Image (cartoon, rainbow, N blue to C red; front, side, top):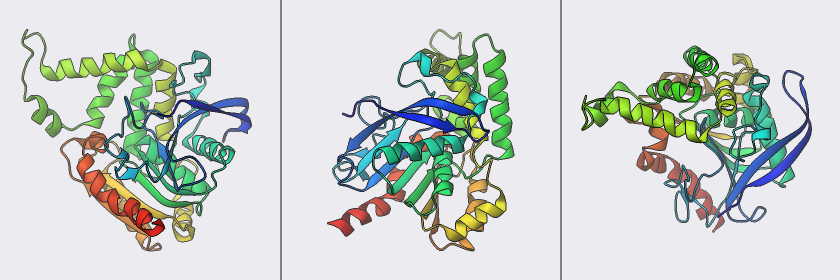
Length: 330
C-alpha cells in the first residue's frame, strides 16, 4: 500500500498576495506507477485525506483492484490539502487559515503534479470540497483534464453554503469544545431528517438517558476531536466558501465554451449542503454552449453524505467513463 510522500513547494504566492517561502504537499499513489498508465486524481473532502483505499480508506468501494477505478489499470494520486494534519506534524498546521482559497489549493495540486511529471489527467474526481477544488483545477487548465467529476459539489459556493461556513467558523472560534461542537452541527447538514428517522426513529439507548440520535451525534463529535486538529478544521471549513470566489458567471460561461474537458456533474437529490438545484442550474447553463457536459443524480435519503454511502449508484454512474478507457487501450 502506498506510503505518505512529500513534495516541497517553494516560493508560492497566494491569491491574496501573501508569499510562502515553503509549503509541504503530502500525497499517496495507488495502482500503476506514474508514467505508464492514465492518471486519476482523487481530491478528498473536508475531513478526508489521501488514504482513499486500503485500511481506513474512505473510497474502497469505488477504487481498487477490479473496482470501477481499477488500480490494475489506472494510476491513482491523492494529495492532502496542506494543513489538513494527515502528515501528523503539528508544525505543518496552518494558523492563518483565512489566507488560503480553494484556488490556491488547486494551484498547489497542479504544481505537485508537474513535479511528479504528470501534465495531463484522465480524470479528476472529488466529493464536496474535493469536487470544488477539482472545478478550480479545471478553471486553471481547461484543456488538461479529460474528465472532470465533481460529486455532491458545485463550481461555486452558494449563499446557503457560505452561511453555514460562517456558523461553523463561529463555533470553532468560540466554543469551549470547538471541534466536537462544530461536528455536531455539521452532521445535521450532511444528513437529512428522513435519513435520521429511518436510522433511529426516536429510539433511546438501553440506559434511557440519551436518544440514539444524541448518542450518534456525540460519538461523531468525539471521533473527529480525537483525530482532527482545530487548526485543520478551521482551514478546511474556510476553503468551502472560497470555491469559485475568483470566477464570475461570465468567466464560468467562457470556460464552458472553451474547455475540452468532459464534465460529469453528480448531484444528490436530498443534498442540503451542495443542493441538487444548484447543480441542475449549472448543467442548464453549461449545456447551452457545451455538448460534453452530463448530469447525474443519486437518489438517496441520506443527503450530502450519500457520496460516501450510495456506492452502487455511484459505481453505476461512473462505470462507462472508466471502463471505456480500458476497452480503448486494450
